[in-house]
Image (tube, rainbow, N blue to C red; front, top):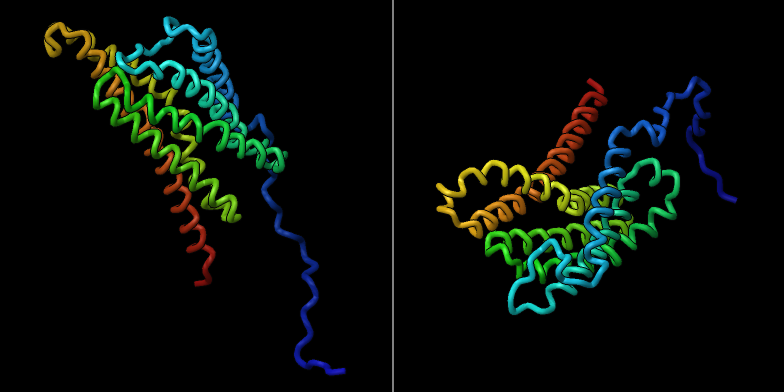
Length: 249
């Protein structure tokens, strides 16, 4: 029987181990409770009018010559609600760490019963928006990026490249919840521009509503996306500084 020679492996160190940072409790994430509250309130406010089957209750005017708009809008709202609810659990660190198997299954629900059908229906009704071409361009771009980011995140998870998976899913998360910031920006833009109805817009209420919808639409998703990218870049910079400090001088 052949033997090998050389220095035997050193025994494991017996000194005190380096303490690891304790995992934060779920209630110590200060953004979790506000996000849960906003998610539930927004869905409770937005969803009921589209459960009646009556186009008159829609909060979005039905464009002429597009009879499929309302059923597609109802489908979009339903699937987007699924996306918002499942996305909340996907980005909750405590839930993700405590229930990894559930995290994987809810992730599939988020992709295939949330973002995919909501993005495709949003792409169609967004292109046919009654608020003009600028808003239509925003809607189409948002839907394409939402679908693309989510598909990239799912692909990274399937390849077990979890660092890239989380990065893409953070971008997807920003676009999923941009519908809320869209409403906030819409109110702000309306308050700023409505006093200019008789001057800048020459009394044209349609032009005012188109401008408000367009600015609110673009700001609603570009600002959260830029913030999410800043957050990712900030984390990358912190990791680079940590690596530099850990190098021997």
